[in-house]
Length: 101
Image (cartoon, rainbow, N blue to C red; front, top):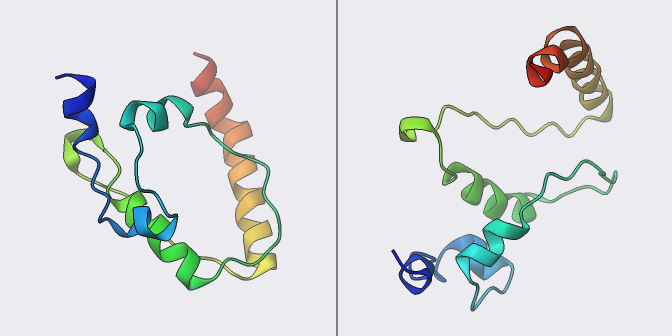
């Protein structure tokens, strides 16, 4: 498949494209620039801002196209902090060793 053929798979009519004003993107440039981001602000995110992001997330590739994820929006800061602490403890207990093996 050529770059041009792959780029045609990108559909400008998708909600995520409309929400961010995307009109002409090269699929490989987008994929090549993707990075994990771990510096977050405490600025609230509206449902209107979340909707296109969730739409994009549910269309992400997964093994055997099973799409096993579930998304939970947590707006309460105390609950988010508790989830963060549990995640940190799980990472330190098991995840770090797994990622380093």
